[in-house]
Length: 169
Image 1: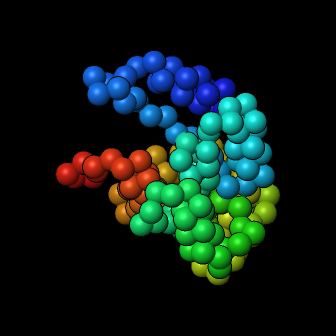
Image 2: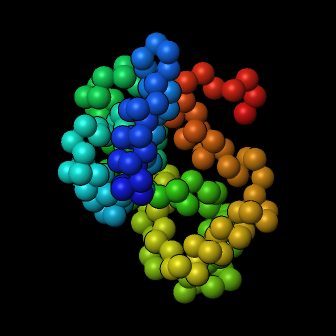
């Protein structure tokens, strides 16, 4: 994903609106785990113009809605709103309701490597088979209410990118 982000970002520089502003903007969303943090570090080494909280983001338990788009203010806002989840890895699948995870764990506990709970949030490290089962369950039985946490992440991105959200979502 890092190479693609750098490539798309470079291509977007050449595709401008009549006003001279870029027509497209590409951002990356990474899990907030060791691999995601390393990927952000690597992409920033590849292209130093890529900045966290502007071009790349980590998924946090609380996707803070800062009143400022200043990167330092945003960083502090994210850290402040997630203080009670400090040291909790967070991945996309952690946004699904606990009921999905509990169903899988009850059916086959070996699909879960380990879990870590801090306050009201639980991060689970799944085996590849566990992730596949979680994906199938979400696709087969997931309803809009089960995806509210993921939808709120999309809403947060509209805020970060200063994009007007659709009238209905």
